[in-house]
Image (tube, rainbow, N blue to C red; front, side, top):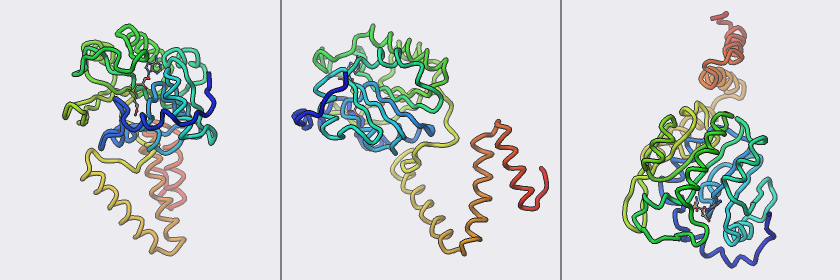
Amino acid sequence: MTLAISDGEGLANLLNFPGSKGGNGVWQTIISEMPPHDLYVEPFCGSAQVFRRKRRAAATILIDSDAAVTAAVIAEYSEGAGTTVICDDGARWLESNLGRLNTRTVIYCDPPYLQSTRRDKTPRYYGEHDFTAEQHEDLLRVLSLLTVQRVPVLLTGYRSDLYDRRLRRWRRVDYPAMTRGGPVTESLWCNFERPWALHDYRYLGADFRERERVKRKKARWRQKLEKLPALERAAVLDAVNSLSAVIVGNDDTSCKQKLAEWRQRAGEGTP
Ligand SMILES: C[S@@+](CC[C@H](N)C(=O)[O-])C[C@H]1O[C@@H](n2cnc3c(N)ncnc32)[C@H](O)[C@@H]1O
């Protein structure tokens, strides 16, 4: 079901959303692991803190089983401009849409934490939209179907026996996060190798200092290039682009061919 725009009543609740990924350093870590994509899907969107900050994909689908949540998101981000908000079960939606998800899709899953990993053991944290251990098992099953299909998936949560066992072949990135109960270590699992190219480079860097260092470096290089005569700048950029073709497609023959072509044009001969 796709909801109509609501009166925004639920909007205030989104600001204090439990489990939100709006904490400093958290959304930057997640965005800086996403490979380039055309379709972005968040099947447990909540207040969609990652979606809000990442560079938009050509198409985005935000899903939550809680109609009040999807209504509030729609009220804030009126649908259109490539963004669709759907009220549905995240795992069911993924399973019934397997056919339209491919290697140019990125799926970011942030389901309610496994009850056994929560400090606050109060049951029904998300009311009737909480997640049972069986639902986690089922989600992991659907994610393994996506892995077979080579659809890039990112999943956040706390480590547990279940996740350690089922995601042992996935790459895990641990990051510090702040909760109402104090500092914790959360984990991000990815079913792909560290990407050679990113969808959004703005937040690259393991921590604030590193992100600032990368930002300064980008500004410095940009300034240097801006000062060059136009054709000299184009020549430097052409050389740099040929390098990134090799990095991005290090086992891709079409990229090696691109480099050979560039070297020939540049008078270096075939490598
Ligand atoms: C940890 S929160 C997501 C927080 C979000 N990443 C943010 O930045 O605010 C988990 C969300 O999953 C939703 N949810 C629970 N069960 C679901 C289900 N079966 N399908 C889809 N969404 C579900 C909850 O309503 C909640 O909004």
